[in-house]
Image 1 (cartoon, rainbow, N blue to C red):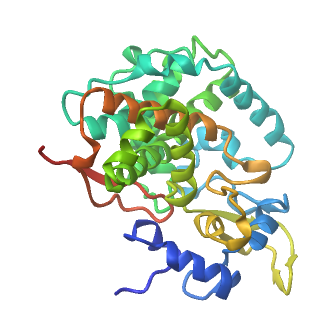
Image 2 (cartoon, rainbow, N blue to C red):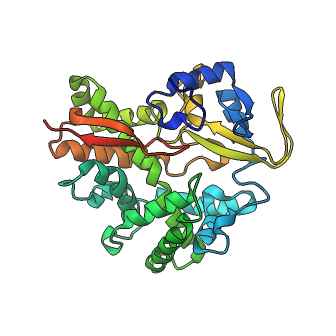
Length: 345
């Protein structure tokens, strides 16, 4: 068996015993191979995410060099998730207001045609269509909206290359023109576009992992879960905790910061293992998947609602979720998005 690392764990078949061991054996440690600190335990994760002296971007490079002076770079600079300091609060308030004003009951109207490749349609097309619909822009106005969301998500993700930037910049240009009528203010417009694509990987992973967990459960248990909306919502929340779509995030020290017996020096980075903290015995049922503190995910509840609607929609088509099999994962260092297939009856 190949030894896991914090980077390979998200796409391992079962990384959770590894995470649980880390919380006990190496709650906070410096990883020589990764050249960064790794926070694993509840105490270490809380210490990092709860301290605003840990920033979401390195001070020397607030915008990645490969996307500077591009439409993608302009979007990146306005993203709530990538902003620290005084600009963060007003941007977050605007996006929170957008999410709070959404009529989530309208999500079902954004469901794609499930007659062909229903799993991919629900995992990758539905979330971006749902968010666009809730933002007041019907998916019909943006044919292939999920392709734009995918291009942006790929270019922002860890490991993105210079080849990803022009494709994503083209997506920004198209979306900017479409969103302009609904959001005349450029800052607000870019904030809305950011919300559109930031749910892409997380929602795909949450839908996919929920479907897989239902597929491997006892049929009677699965039927009981999907037959009741409240029970299904609770199940999705447990999947978000125990088989989460987002496994880690990164922070950068803006100064020397003491965490128990360690000192994270200014400029050093910390890989925060959210999925590990979920498995710490001190977690007491807390879910770290969507982050904590100033940069906690604004759309966490929305993502779980989208996942619940997606699962119910698939069941209502008559598909037996027991036919779903997992054949691996889409490659990524921080998210867990399964490759699913639908076998024959």
